[in-house]
Image 1 (cartoon, rainbow, N blue to C red):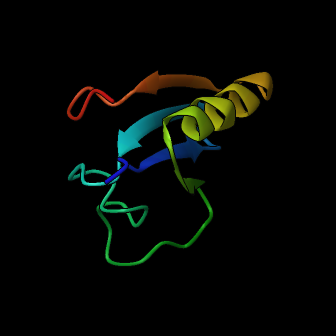
Image 2: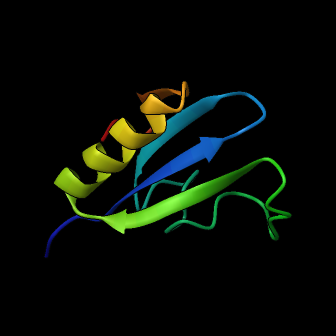
Image 3: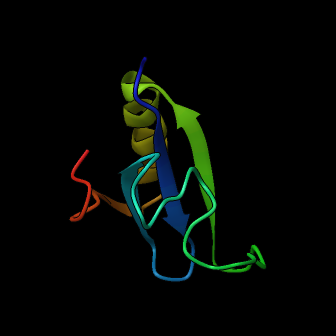
Length: 74
């Protein structure tokens, strides 16, 4: 089975993180909150590894600092 990846983009902090889908901070693109207002950011995905890197590159072009998650280290 191919691993799935997500990229979280936080508009307010101008930062993003790439995650493995099963990461406790990602939860398959739902994050850690029970609901999401959509005011602070957006989950992008699911992607395969190459798709996640392409999505991260597009987000970086908007001036967002995108790094791998320190917990799941995709």
